[in-house]
Length: 271
Image (cartoon, rainbow, N blue to C red; front, side, top):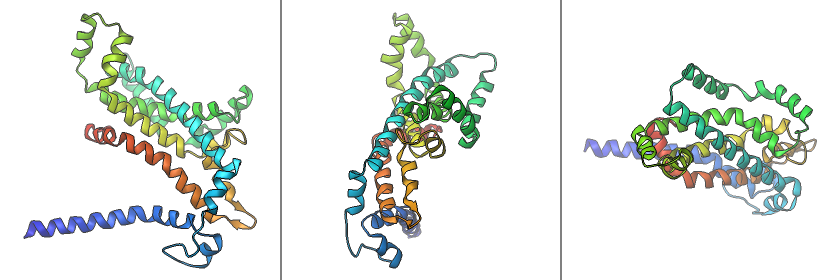
């Protein structure tokens, strides 16, 4: 009897938590199908005058939909570069011991802990001098300083869980290091690669300060475009809500594909 009561309490608690977590998302979706007048004048659980105009505005206005395109471009570039750099670095930390290895590893993590505003001025001056302002590669490279340490930390944990004997056996069998790494080692840590890619994607997708400062027109991301809804006439709540809904979709798709890998990352203590 007591176990049934405890189970019932847990179910109620879980239901309340899900309600609390999903309420903001539901309300944003609800607002995206309303007009600004309805949003500011009434409190309704469902749109009284259902409209697609807010989504039509985003998909027909180049300044809006190009924001998503620009974000996807530099996020994809950053994720690929981050993993390309982090994989050999994590392998070195996992398999070799060298002078100052723990200090270097800690230094990498301190970069991840530093607020983006600290690096804003150096990046701005450097990119202005190099002619990289308002380019996709500028934002992708700027985000490396945060994503590479995180990817190295995650991948190192997965690699340390692979026995060293696998490396030695592959070398005895005549595998070169590149062949061993691609054909044998990478498939063994694909869960770690998926988790690292997810976190690199998510940070680069939602980061605003660097992305907004280092771009202006040609590479302006959606997170910066959304700030233009504030004007002298007030806030365009409806369009902003629709843009927010569309911004969630790429992250939700990525989570769907790496959901099992994230669970394994939690089990290994690296997430």
